[in-house]
Image (cartoon, rainbow, N blue to C red; front, side):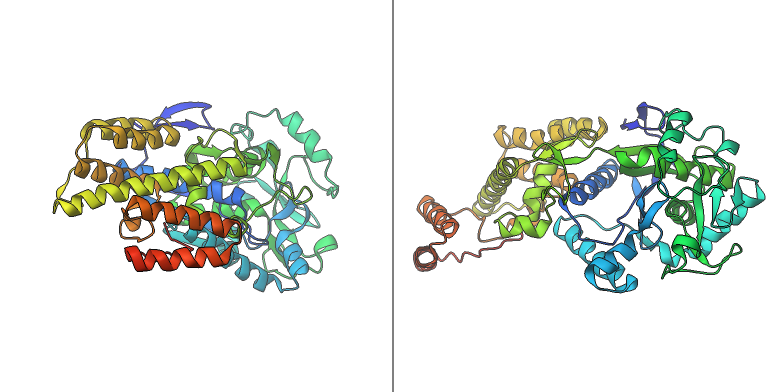
Length: 468
């Protein structure tokens, strides 16, 4: 049975969805005000691994992801300016243009990372009515109140407010008291905004809508409650996100969702991913260690090299990105692709096809055991290498690995017919390696000469960028 570490229960829980084999899964999507970086890539690759694992185990997953295109302030605790307006000013675009531009950048990056899109992708700005309805319901249940600048959720009326974080509310209040902009009309320091009015510091806010409380825009937290419940119901199975969302964003989601519906729990299993570090430090633009996928591609790496790197660490463990580690992942992935192609070549020579082969049940049992252990993907990946070293027949090895790749997402099946990775003579391989060295040294003349030799002597055409 699948066991998941659940942030809500603080333990490994047996996975028992509300609706037998049907799973409702919501993932916090991006705030689209700037370029997608490799930290985002890790988070969404981990979400993808969870969804693929559930599918492999026989569950039917309905996956919903939001796009935050309004309301997320520079501080998660209702402080600062709207990130979308900040991005618009930085890049000289309108708020609508910046949201659309960086939404496209996000999905282009996710596509390159071989991440399966969510079944439902929903934008905050297209669900304002649903957010207003939840706030109205919270007023009816005496859980919300209005000030001259905003509408707040009253945390004193929700006794289990900190059940997700386990945080002492007095500690949370200390953090809230340090906000730069404090509404003197707030009843409790920890109360959070449901709706900002277009007044005071937000009097010129560009994105705004009519509401029963005046012209304004929604707080960040309410959007996820509105969209998750619209598409998955008042209660659903899995909610994922980063560990930084536990104490504020997800805590507030639970309070407003359960407060509105009266049903507990809002979400059965909360899964939180740890951060990606760069050279042992938190990513920061001020230190210059924020990398985009395009930055890595310019250095000769492919998106699937980065994906392989992410597979080497569990989602609940911080992962440290270094270029040495990425280079190691690249070499391992290339080796894996070569060996898979060699297996395919053997099948071709013996006139056996991968469709005729069967995966090995013993290795499949071990693989399933790994992913059922709180999605232990590093162990699952190691089993792939065990298969390659085993005494199974080539056809069983190939089929077993291709089946496992339905979870790993390394596109191994699409690499089978790629000329750059097919089984080729040793002499040709040596020439390719020399050409790679020449290109790395920017010796374009030698690289071009070797390319012509490969075509003339071995009928091999080398492309400098591969999808595999």
